[in-house]
Length: 301
Image (cartoon, rainbow, N blue to C red; front, top):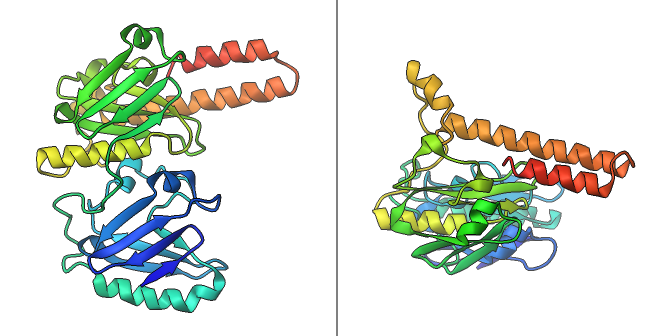
C-alpha cells in the first residue's frame, strides 16, 4: 500500500512508513540527498491534512523521535520538510483515507518523549562540501578538511578529526534566506568561554546553501545518541541562567544567548554583503572592490 505525491512516495509497511523522495526538480535538494527515510510506527503520533489547491499531508511524530527537525531547529526552507507529502487536488479524498490509516498506526504513548531516535536516516559514510572545507562522517569519526577559502589558521592545520565519543554537541546553522552558515561541534575539551568564530574555529566548517551539511549533522547527532545510550543533548531549548549569571552567560559564545547573538552578527554580515552587491550592480563599486570587501566581511564570521 502506498501513496504517491509530487515530492515523494509513502510506502506503508507493517513496521512503519518508508518515505522515498523524488529525484526530479519538484523535490527539494535536501530530500533528494536523503533519498529515503523510514518512520517506524512507534514514532508516529498521527497526521494532519491541509486542504488547499495542492493538499499537504504531514506526519506528526513523538518528541525527540527524529533528528532532522531537532538539528535544523526551525531552519528548514519551504519544500524541505521531510515528513510532508504534497498531493494533487484529485487526491484529496484518497489522502483522507490514508490519514485514518496513519492514525490507526500511532504509538500507544504519543506524548511520551522517545527513549532514542527512532526515525532511520541513510547511514554513513556521508560527506558535504562547505565554503571553506569539506566535512565527512564515517559513523565513528567526523573529519573536517580545509580548502583554499579557509582561514589561514585552518589551512595551517590542514584537517581536524573528532571521534564521536568525544563529542558533546553538534550545531548546525543557516540563515533563513540561505547563504553562509556553519556546522560546528563541541567536544569534551571545548572551552565555550574562548570559542572563536566559525571561520576560525577548527571544530567548524562554514557552509553555503540553505541545507548544506544538514544530513551529516543529523548522522552525527544519531551516532552521539547511540554512543551515549540516551538522546543527545539539543543545542536549542536550553534553560537560560537567572540572576547575575545571566549577564556572564550572554557574553559566552557557547551558551544559547551567545549563539543567538553570534547568529545575529552573521545575519548582519550577509545583509551587508547583499547591499554591497546591489552597489556593484548599480555601477557604484567595481568587481574588485566588491570582492575585497566581501572577503573582509567573511573573515569576521
